[in-house]
Length: 193
Image (tube, rainbow, N blue to C red; front, side):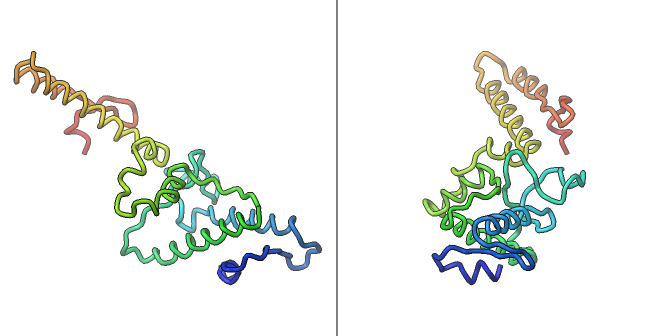
């Protein structure tokens, strides 16, 4: 962190040499950038959203096919300052990689990139940046659940707007609407709790 903050304003190329190792230049520097990218993906840092891969303890790193998306924290969370420091470091790190023309393996999600690219355009309106498809990518089980709810609402609205049906028929048909749970079993809305 100190190294990147110290060199943040410098446009000079950063060149790394490891202790007790010969050689400088692109090889060791690229390895340094790769090591940082890897370390920034650790579960223990609490930076990245992960659904269940950590619970299976297959790796100490967050590895997601959908890419990395930040964990949302409450403004009052005691870890927030530390988390913000890591993201600040990441911003300097990405900028330095771009300036020095190094490619790094930091698979950010499309949803996160959308947020990063759209942040300055309209700081007051974040609602239109991400949509349900982004939620499905970030958190598949929750996203698909909300997708099912939206489909259920559409079905309910079609029933309620059908002028050929009586109020009793509409009420009965609405009471028959179900949503699938994670085991793909149909569940009544009142049983979701």
